[in-house]
Image 1 (cartoon, rainbow, N blue to C red):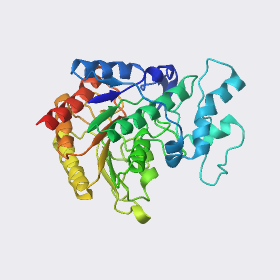
Image 2 (cartoon, one colour; image 1 turned 45 degrees about the vertical axis):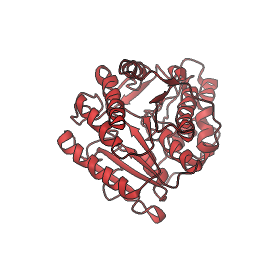
Image 3 (cartoon, helix red, strand yellow; image 1 turned 135 degrees about the horizontal axis):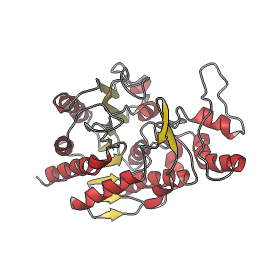
Image 4 (tube, rainbow, N blue to C red; image 1 turned 90 degrees about the vertical axis):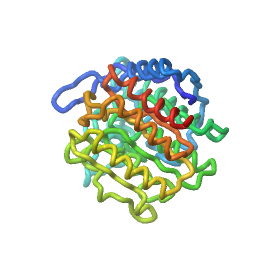
Length: 346
């Protein structure tokens, strides 16, 4: 399987995040990519492809152009006001009942276009965001050229980003951009399966009124876990999209004995939908020792997940999302890809 990867993410580093009652170094760090790429290489996946540059046309089909412009301009505007060497984050957040149209201030833009304090901006943030988008779109290009499966090793992740909101380490929604590009390339229907521990609230919001992308998410229930406000099983889509969102929330402490049957429900629904392409938002923060997770999956479980995904026999694009247990992160990601490719070979 070809891996699409770029070193351009490295400049997005060194900021801090609010974790409940304290400011801590970002869990989402460049070292994550080091262990993932190292483990994939050790597992025999050495066909690494650099992303080709893509413009913003597909991005603007998924995201509000004014929001995308904000992502590009945020840090330069912040630096002009405060000087270099600092990270930008919102001081207030837009609320219902407040005028949420941003003015020319970077502070108002941060308030309107971010929903939490886990999306800091530093000098290298836009370059990393743009590279992640290119990694996702290059994966689509490769599949259009005949590849049956690819892995877009994106950083930063994307599934919490909606049309006009960044949050949860996510700025542009790489998986959603990939899904749209597959449709642009001729796919009639795309299934987008999110197996991250956290609900893909941004992806759901993007496709909630559409039937050409079936969004399925396995995640910790919102009563227990971030993002707390979305991901209930009653959320099934609306309008033309009614019936094309499937949420499978589970309580903290869920292990593979219960997570696996939920995956089977998702796979059965995907088969019934009969998509032309499968996009997998691959998060492995379901691991038992993940510092921001709460499920109890073990490393061998990810081999089985990969095998079962391959059983759909669909053109498949993996897009990297979360996973923060550094000691096991690489192994868990490599196990998914290994299980998938082994099952493909039969």
